[in-house]
Image (cartoon, rainbow, N blue to C red; front, side, top):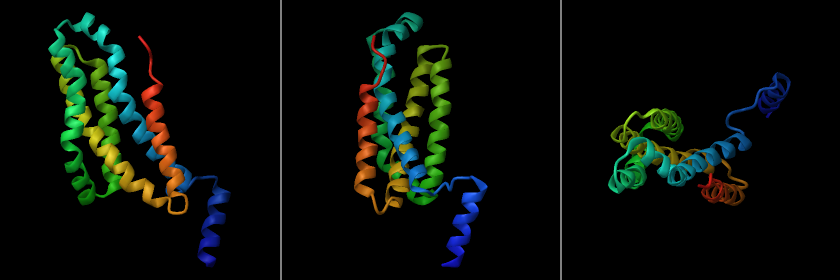
Length: 166
């Protein structure tokens, strides 16, 4: 008991937040759900610009949209297994890093095939990120799990609504 008092008073004096605090874990889970859901929908707004910049027909544009969703859906179960083997926190971190890098790759893609390839990898990263965020963070919020789950799901639903319009 005295150890927990010392630890919490040390944290209060140092001004640092504990990475395992419920607020931090909920924010990380919300961020994971938000970016995955937002990215699945926001690309639709950019399709006219993609077509104007890269050319290509409808099939190329379909691959830009569906490549992400295809890889996400195909690798969701495998990402869960990977999360179990590596640990959910590591899988979440790796998924977030890969997701950010592939987002930059999508933005810098010089051709339509490069954009499609980046979207395919981004969908795989999204699968790892989505599953690992649930496995890592939501169970850690024992006392308020239902409220936390509601906040995460509301954030995911909001990300589908909060997108630029054409």
